[in-house]
Image (cartoon, rainbow, N blue to C red; front, side, top):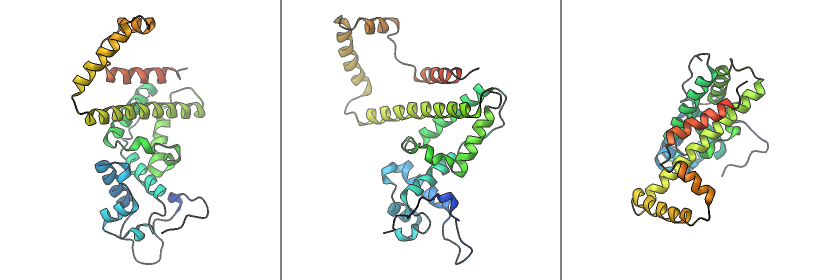
Length: 235
């Protein structure tokens, strides 16, 4: 088994191949793509050095020559997905451009539902991650604020989108596991909640439900969240 490195190491600082020896059979992009395919098909827990090696058709120990640690494999995966971000010429309206970023991030996380588990600032400084961050900062050129504040805005925006999508994914997963229909589940829960509200023990909740008792529009809620985050940083 490969030993743990004696000191911290960034995989991007390691040469992908040295000048000596035969050309490597696989690139980092090949390894990342194989790992992403596994995660997309069977979830993040299916990603192991052994499974990725099998996907590539090589031995597990051979894979350690390319990727010393599983954490490095995760970093390759996050960078590969970050490369899916579309980078466009900002239009001069920082709110509109960041809203576009948010919607793109939401779509990306839905395509790769394992990604919220790996959304760590540590993995954000990969080559594709840095290009994405620079693009987002360019989108905010017209925002009159220090760069530190812009980084805070981007961090808050990404955090809100990631949390929102994680909740969407968790809800969808729960619905898939139900032994009955989602409509039947909702009927039973709404009946129970209605009885509790009608008891008079929760007057403020009763008032809230009286004001708006309809189903939640998840798309409108997402837009409302974006509005609140973006406007909180407006000059």
